[in-house]
Each structure stands twice: as C-alpha cells, then as structure tokens.
Image 1 (cartoon, rainbow, N blue to C red):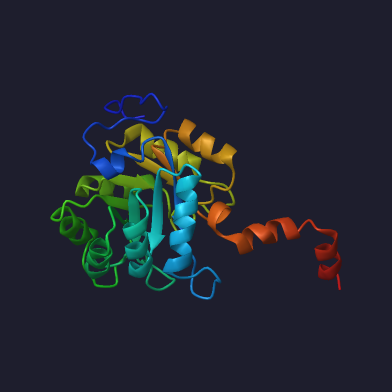
Image 2 (cartoon, rainbow, N blue to C red):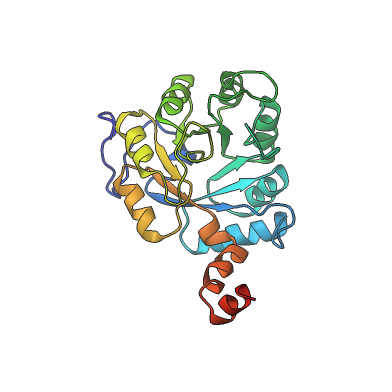
Length: 247
C-alpha cells in the first residue's frame, strides 16, 4: 500500500483527493455489463437491465462498453459509470483513440477507461493525448494496464485509477486462469492513485483476496453478467453433457 494511502474503514485504501465518482467506488464491487455482438443480451436494453440488477445486488459502480450502452445506463442507473469503447479485437482496442474517448465522455460516462499499455495506438497519437483531452473535461481516466511499469507511466500522465484489466492479454504479462493479484499488490504498494482489480475474478473468494492485496475496488464481469458462460460451467459437469461430449 502506498504510504500516502491510509486505510478506509471499509478496508480499502483511502485517497482523499479523488473525484466523487472515483471516491464512490472505494471498497466496492464494480459490475462489468458487456455483451458482444451475437450474444442474446447484446444491446442497451438488456445491459441497462443488467446494470439495474447489479445495483439491486449491491454494486458500487458499473463498467459498460459502447456509446449506446453507456448512454442508456447513464440515463437510468444512479451509480458511477465507467465507460469504454471496444474497436477491433487485436492490439489497442479499448478506447483506442482520442476520438473514441471523447465519444464515450459525451455519452455520459463518469469515468473513461482506456488501454494504457505501451503498444502503438491506431491514431498514432500517444496515450498522453487521450488523458489530456479527458482531463480538460474534468473526467477521471481509468488506465487499463498489464504491467507495473505501464501503471507507473500512466500515473505520471495524471490518470485517476489504475486497473489490471489487461494483465494476461499482452505479450508482456503472464497469462493464466487466475486474477493477477501479484500485479494488484505491486501497483497498490507504490501507486499514488487507486488500484482496481479486474480480469478473471470469478469467485467471491478471489474478490476478497484482491481487496486483501490492496485493491480499491474490484471489477467482475463474466461471472455475473454472462449467462451463457455461467450455464456452460454448470453444464460441463452434467451427465448428459459428458455423454454427449463422448459421442
């Protein structure tokens, strides 16, 4: 934990100078409400309903993708909203350019999440340009990183939050089935901004361990908001499924 980050009564590190949307996430669960094209739940109507259900369940915030979903959720759900825009499937595709970031901001996001790895960005501009454009609008930036070095570089640019979202999804980070709690701990020990644990958190026990490692908040997506994947996990142990797999 950073020496400038005292402990909040909830157990999460405390950062007194954070903006209200960021402060509201302290010690809380953020539910990622995303469904890709082709998924039966894809689209603003279903994702707004999912966000409302997450609020009823005690979520402290929502993470949503795409300007349509962000706009619909922002208009309906009274929780801090982390918005992003995925464009493509390779390289930098989470809010990859200044234009994407500004569009997410205009849609109503309280916090804008961006890929903050060191990889080249599609518009050829540096990450600093995106961070500056959002800070000019007083919007906090969540930096999705894959390594501690990327986290330090993003913090120097003035981001409001660091998130381990991309650990395991870049050539510079270890892949695996478990959340990268070692990265959470490394970032939390040195960062002067809140650190969010995101990526492969599938059980309440893993979420608790993330908080124990110093996470300010924990993001959970698939384990809560992807019924097809949740069903698949249970179906894998069903006798009928196993019999069918052997045919």
